[in-house]
Amino acid sequence: MTDRRTTRLIDFHCHLDLYPDHAAAVAQRERERVFTLTVTTTPKAFPRNKELADRTKYVRAALGLHPQLVADRAEELSVWKEYLPTTRYVGEVGLDAGRRFYGSFDRQKAVFAEILSACATAGDKILSVHSVRCAKVVLDMIEARLPIGTGRVVLHWFTGSAAEARRAAEMGCYFSINAAMMANDRSVKIVGSLPKDRILTETDGPFTHQELTDRASADVMPARDSLANLFGMEREGMDSLLIDNLKALLS
Ligand SMILES: [Zn+2]
Image 1 (cartoon, rainbow, N blue to C red):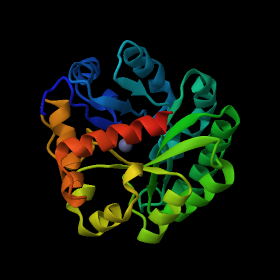
Image 2 (image 1 turned 45 degrees about the horizontal axis):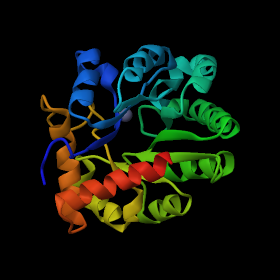
Image 3 (image 1 turned 30 degrees about the horizontal axis):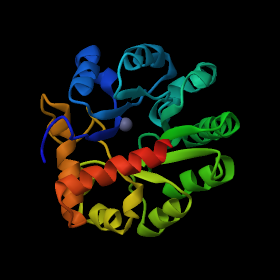
């Protein structure tokens, strides 16, 4: 049952271009057959990410403009728009209302609003969304600008309340869950309340608080194992549930 050829793990949010060797990190994901969404923090990084991902079966590159960089890079929104037609995947995008980034919150909202509207107009985009300390605002904006049927959202490292999680699920959002979330009691409670068919795994590598290993699949396993444990499922069952969720998201 643990045949490596049939095991498929998922890392739906990581930053392979920030690993010490970008090309090697992509190659490793491909070799280990880990379905990977590698997000970018600036649109200028996208072409190289896409070039490497396009040679693989298991790695996809997402076009991002990270909210933590908006203070300095808001003008790159034009570059982001230029590349949008070339990809189905968008991220990392969203809002960050944490202390360090709150100064740019209004600009972040302006940029995120344009990103959501551009995705709705283009249609069929899949977004990996950051929502630190502002889940409500992020959900309000998604509801207003990317209505159900115009695109799909995966909330990355969601830290909102249980009520906000419920609302997000009702809006059709998915959630990518990492090991750090599963080490936090409050977060585990919320994850346990999510509809099981909306869950994916992620590492957020290399920014994760977990120790990364030299095997991509080993890096995803702690999140997968904690989810299996939380839902009282066998690992194999959890793996097929996650793959079914990924297929539904991409369908
Ligand atoms: Zn990230």
